[in-house]
Figure 1 (cartoon, one colour):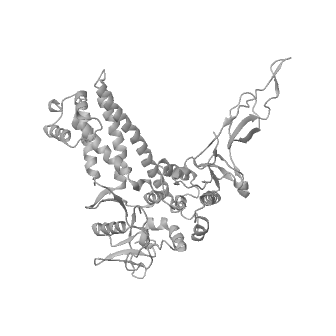
Figure 2 (cartoon, rainbow, N blue to C red):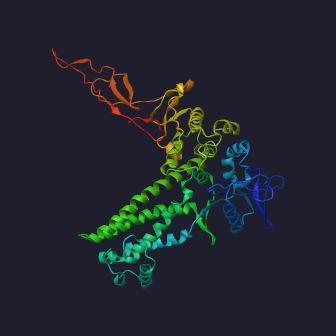
Figure 3 (cartoon, rainbow, N blue to C red):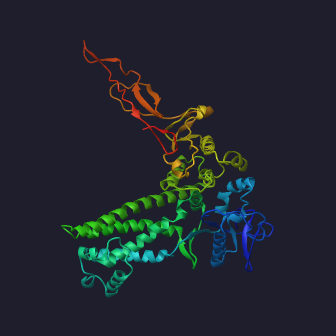
Length: 495
């Protein structure tokens, strides 16, 4: 039974769709969906019973959601495009504050992804296992037809892969001249291209979907295109495939290198391609690991996991900024799209008052100030700003500008230290110096040509120090200015 029921659900009952309040009907379960809206369209009446306001989601996307309900047998679904009156700011603020409860109470979270071609994870699992078996039972320069440790069935399967559509980014003639089994390379390339293609999908580049991946449970993925809709397995399976693909790339590289004393140009070309795969798969695994660690923090900590878990908060900011994510035209959603993760950070009234509008500087300041106030830690980036915010000047803000806002604004957010009264932050600083330690240090700032420079020196800098009974010399003065550059927020990053 669901612990929290939304005020509206989309129901599919006797072939009809309607939006209704589930509480009077004693509905005790529901599913939830995670998807990308795409481009908003002019307002229109969607003609679903119970939706007496206009919507701006495309008709095709709304039909895709209905197709998912029919294909999966879902009877009750919470979907934001019709279960929230998107033009009512007060209602939207109230619903944003409930995202954690909705996603944790739902029976299953369905991820809907537009895919030109649908791939099934179990096929990729089997093919990667097949590659692993071949690499361990056959030498890197061996002929598959003559390899004594390969069965006839495995040799045929290799031959079949060699004849399939070629996906390795080096032409067949070059691969033949390198004397590397073409079936192995084609099978490997097909598998990792499918895995990378999934995580390159638009779905994995949005802020709201990041939050929904962290909050959802029993997450099932669906691939959809104009021809069909298919279940493509669980999110955890695909995340494991990202790691397994990296494992096979490293093994394949060793397999090719270890059987050759001298490498030809064609072999080196193939190895360079695999090395590039290793780099991209390393990045993908970091992205997947960030999502996994953030989910663990939230699952183990409950709705207010972030109150005393400052390391977990750092994990969230790192995970969301590993891959720059966008929020479309509504820039405030960069921050509002994380309010389900930080459940209880703002009340519905505070969301409407402090997290709405187009003033991204104000919104970012309010977000970090509230997070700092409620956790007792000062959350900041190492930035020099104008001082207009008084004691709270250490809070980073994102400048208003016409370009697209991304989650880069969370990159490098750190816990500066304990938050004191009136918005001051108490931070621990360490310096490495020669000789007798001195208590005080000084930072001198100067501004010119729109940029800052700074000089860093100890309190005794320039004074004489004894070097003998009758001799002394001045402590060196290092007044060479160091340049500081603007970061992506438009503020000044201290180097």
